[in-house]
Length: 227
Image (cartoon, rainbow, N blue to C red; front, side, top):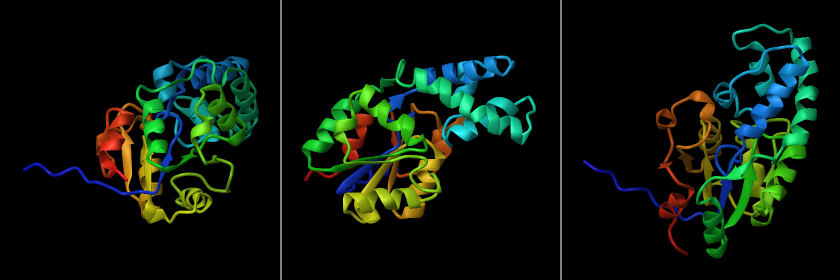
């Protein structure tokens, strides 16, 4: 028996960044491998680094140094600024919008929806990346991975975005690519749609509890009641 697609009437839509709006893996992998080379460690394939993305830079660095290898906490802590230095250089060089993202953001703005980015990426990288890829102007606010003391999956970052947009959590819709996004949205009491083309930390996205799966960003519009 088929189930009807749920429909929502949000006043605001919150977006994850890496793996949802932008394909940034080539930049992240290049910075990670520049870091590993500088530290005298072998580079890793991009597909492997792909699975490390989602919980912020310290987690990415930790996994680059420890998956199938070993590193002390001091070595990991010292490697984080090395990664940041290299990522500052390559951030946005290879990044690209996923198909349909620009049209989706245009359509949502045309419907009068308030839009936000809620990402675990640090603000020093998030804001330049949005500018360099030409989508900064769509968003009314940005909550980055270091805006608060916590990151997704903690729902506090979603609550902050909603407060800045002047809506309740129940009036918002989250769109992301991973369990981090789903758990944060569920903790905040808002519906969540997950894209199937993102990163999801190596976890099959169809195994993550959510309100719908999107093979294209444009499909999000099918879940939103017209104003």
